[in-house]
Structure formats: C-alpha cells, structure tokens
Image 1 (cartoon, helix red, strand yellow):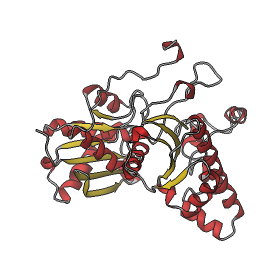
Image 2 (cartoon, rainbow, N blue to C red):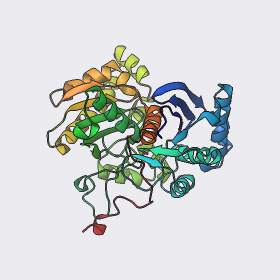
Image 3 (tube, rainbow, N blue to C red):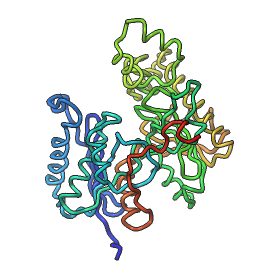
Length: 371
C-alpha cells in the first residue's frame, strides 16, 4: 500500500556550501544553506575526501534542529560525475554510487550528494534517489555535431532546476510538461539556455566547456583562433586558461566583480563600461534564445527566465525587449534544486513516475556507434 505522507531529505553539496531541506510531501519543513570556509575545506586533499565532513555537517544540522533522521522515508542527492544519461529520477544503485564517489567524469562536490544519500539510505534501510543530475543528456543528434570529427557538443545543463521549472510551469497552466515546447534560461553564475521539446532538453549551450553566452564568471563562446593564440602565447598556463573559461571569465574578468547588484549600482552611477559589458551579456543570451527557437522549429509555448539573475529588474526588462515577440516571457526567479530533489523522489514514491536504473552506459558514444 502506498503511503499518503513521505518525509524526504534533499542534499545538495556545492563548492563552498551544503544545502539541505526536509520535505513532508511537497511542504518544506526545514531548509538550510550551510557555508564552508576556505579554512575548513583546505584541510582536504581533494573533493572526494570531503565526504565524511559533509556527511557529519548534514547530521549535525538535523540534530541541532530536532529532526530525527529515522523519521526520513527517503534520501535524495544532487549528483554528478556520471556517464551521460536520460532525464528522470534514479534509484541510486551501487554503480552510480561508485561512479559518483570516484568522480571519474568531473571533480565537483555535487557528486557527494549521491554518495551521502546512498550511505544514509543503506544505514537506515530507506531508498535513496538522484534526480536529473548535471549529466542528463537528451540532445538530438544534430545538436551534437561540430565541424571537427570526433569533437562533439556535450549536454552540460542546469538540468535539475531546468526540469523542475518546466514541470512547475506546466502544472501552473494545467498542462503536462511532455505536451509543451519551452525555452528556459537559467541565469546564475553560469547561464544555460535550453530548448525543451515535449519533455526532452534537445539542445542547450554547454555551461562547463565554454559555449553560449558569457556569464557572470564564465567566458562563453570565444573566437577559436583567438583562443588558440592565447593558449600558445605562453602568458597563461593550461590551468589558467581553463579558469578563464570556467570560473574567472565573463563579467568578473571585465569588471572585477560578478555581483549583479554591484553592477546595477555602477550602471545607475553612469559607469559606461559596466553598462556595455552587462548589456553585451544580455544580448548574447537573447541570441541563444533565438537559436533555441530555431531548434524548436518556431513552435514555442513560452520563454521562462529563472535562476538568481532573473530577480534583477534591469536584466529581465532588457532581455524581454529582445525576445518578447518570439513567445510569452515568464519570470520564475531563483532556483528550486532542493525542492526538485524532493519532488522527483516523491513522484517515484507515489507511483506517479517510475524510477530509472543507472547502467553506466553513455546515451551517446560517438557518431560511429550509431551509423
């Protein structure tokens, strides 16, 4: 018999924080963002070795807030560093646990969400889930091909929040996500603009490898020859070049800050450079939205703006002017990752959705494997 009420613990480890939330069905009863100082994290040789520290942080926070961990019915972890997989909610198995623990694809703390959820589930005899991890890959073939054989575009998206926003919007207009065509722009530290075609993210810019619009601290797409020249200029090491692309580029590189409120203040004080750079980022996002409109063949229900930057009135107003004739612009600011982790697990627990099983086999392994 299916229970009527489930208590779910969502675990979302980030670079310098661990976010956790406790949900009774869809109601959040506890949420906290636990910040980790550089001093705390510097004691660990690598991200994998932070496992016990992060786990103890979660347990301590629950105890301090009088939440009995034995009352938890399921654990749901953020995840990452997996082989590319289709979207959905996964029951964490041993293979997924091992891949996440070893971080063989990407070294990022989000993978520890799987590790912690799985270990807690094993200890307390409860199921553990991973919902739409960053490795979700639903690209159509045409979206993968580049002008150089064996170099393929990869699906690196804010999949968890993108899918959650799509599901929430569909519910709001009394439709099913699978019946809609949407363009969703998640604008935060990184910016992903994805085309959602009947429940699948068929194309998006790669937020990790330098693709699409520049972002607050990422370079976005660059002229290839200029980047090659920079690589061979001997002015930068390999790691410094990668950092320029993935964490030290964009607004930060131009303006010395990636704080949108600070940039807004500069614009209000007639800082011409701040306005030009911010406007350029918005312009590039608008172009990416236009590209996703083409991938949907001109059939788009709505353009949804989400992520932290979507709280910024200047950003929303300026971007909307570019794209409002494509489709209705809907603003759903912020991020709902803890809620998404809980909702995905709840859908499985209530038999609304079937849990998927991780196989470790990529959904796409090169053009030669399918022709």
